[in-house]
Length: 121
Image 1 (cartoon, helix red, strand yellow):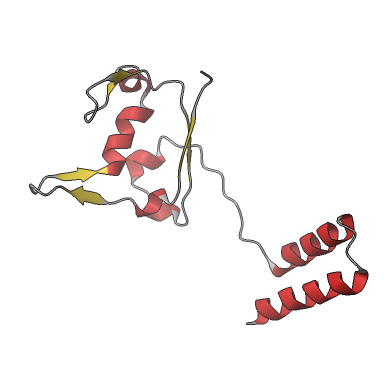
Image 2 (spheres, rainbow, N blue to C red):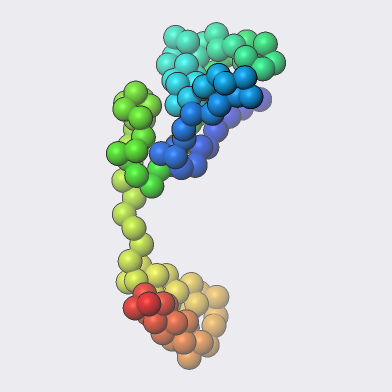
């Protein structure tokens, strides 16, 4: 088996999970043991009670708000800032893809007009 990739979307929104017995578990704390090489080597699944070597996993974590990501988790990430798409990005993409797909010019321009209208609200 190849090296797996695990993607966790909106890691800034992880919170505590409370069991029916009142125990509290923080997802971010659970992730830390999987991200640290020393503990990831012999990570033990609490549910299956099986050990895994998690060192070879590539982790992708996305967030809408970096400030909301717990500091210990953020310190174990390589942060890549992706700027928000602008109207100019979208209209460029629409023109490029519309032309590449052979759409008539008036159709492409109608699409661009709709995108500009949506941008204005």
